[in-house]
Amino acid sequence: MKINIVGGGIIGLFSAYYLQEEGHEVHVFDKGDMLDGCSYGNAGMITPSHFVPLAAPGVVAQGVRWMFNASSPFYIKPRLDLELAQWLWRFYRSCNKRQAEAVIPTLLDFNLEGKKRYNDFYKNTKLDIKLENRGILMLYKTAKKEKEELETAEKATTFGLETKLLNKQEVNDFETGTETNALGGVFYPSDAYLYPNILMRELINLLKINDVQIHTNKPINNFEKKGNKITAIFSNNEKYSAEATIIATGSWSAILLKKLEIRLLLQDGKGYSVTYSKPNEKPNIATILSEAKIAVTPMGNDLRFGGTLELGGLNPRIDKTRVRGIINSIPQYYPNIKVDMPSDEKTWFGYRPCSPDGMPYIGRLKGYDNLILASGHAMMGLSLGPATGAMVADLLSGKNIRDDYLKFFDPNRF
Ligand SMILES: Cc1cc2nc3c(=O)[nH]c(=O)nc-3n(C[C@H](O)[C@H](O)[C@H](O)COP(=O)(O)OP(=O)(O)OC[C@H]3O[C@@H](n4cnc5c(N)ncnc54)[C@H](O)[C@@H]3O)c2cc1C
Image (cartoon, rainbow, N blue to C red; front, side, top):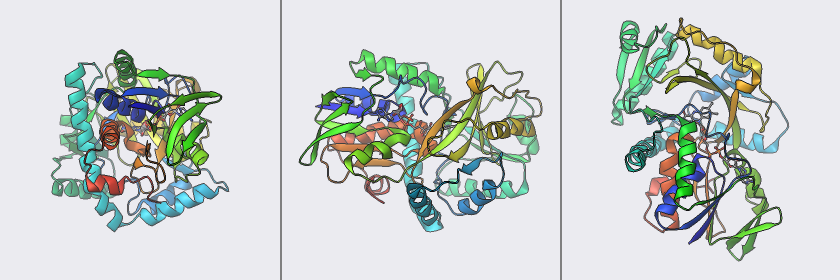
């Protein structure tokens, strides 16, 4: 079958990977050069530990408190925007215990599948994506955060996920790369991490070798419809026919789907990262600084810090106050690491595609037999990339898919 994939981020590329493995003729289209989307500067974490969705109890109250702090990890740009208002309403409605508990087993299994598939991918391709199956540490400084982290760890244990609780001394014995200034930590041995820039580069090369056609600088801006089928996509006046179309356009998915009069609740959660090559000291283990919501990932010789979530309407302005918020948090946890405030050129940002209930959108779009959406992965797109790509391939070949995946990832659910 000839398949068009719109969007060459991690989700589009892993969809291409599994579809070409099944023998399909695959074409990937991207509006840019595919060198700097959201899938590049992220923290590279593969996270079974992130089994609680973004929309969870307590998140709204915390978010409102953060709104009034210019350097906090969360911000919504105030604006009159009906889609934002609808999204926020759905988000508010999803932040409850019943909803969170219902989706946790699904999110956990999908993350575990993602990790397994990364390991299989590495075994099969031997590509040096700097995959480290060494776990991720959650570090906290306050008694309030300790309580929350311990509760999450207890929940993780009930779902069969291994955790190690570390006190102040144990954290320092465990993290041998640099001194830490934390009250304690929870270690999740089943997490992993990799270097996303290398993964993306290697994946693109591999797909090209395997005859996937990659079309860069081809913004897709329209569709040809015949009955309940999409028969072609258009990049300006150029027409590309195919038997099936996959939309994997990350934070731009809602804009593109408007062409088909499909309403998708999606907001772009902008985040920043800064990568230091050869820092003066480096943690040995990938870590999340809990209160500051900053991810710290050693990647080969480099060290990356990533954080903040701004709902700003695809606004490319770099907000230095928030970047400074990230930089200023580092010595509070790692007193010996010296990092300078980066220039704008060295500050990376990406737009996380966020659904209002924190679950991805993966499935067939209502009204069309041959149109699949794979988007809305928010903070977990890298982690869930291979599991999503495999699910897209399974959907197209009519294989059985778990009922909970079909239900909780249904792109028509709002
Ligand atoms: C600071 C930060 C840290 C993060 N850390 C992690 C992490 O540790 N682990 C994790 O799992 N996730 C993490 N994420 C989230 C992760 O990066 C995203 O979920 C993921 O990259 C989304 O992938 P995607 O393929 O859906 O979107 P993208 O990577 O944004 O790709 C979408 C592509 O579609 C293209 N496109 C859009 N519109 C069109 C069009 N009309 N025609 C053609 N092409 C189009 C774009 O050019 C783009 O290349 C992080 C994100 C940020 C910002």
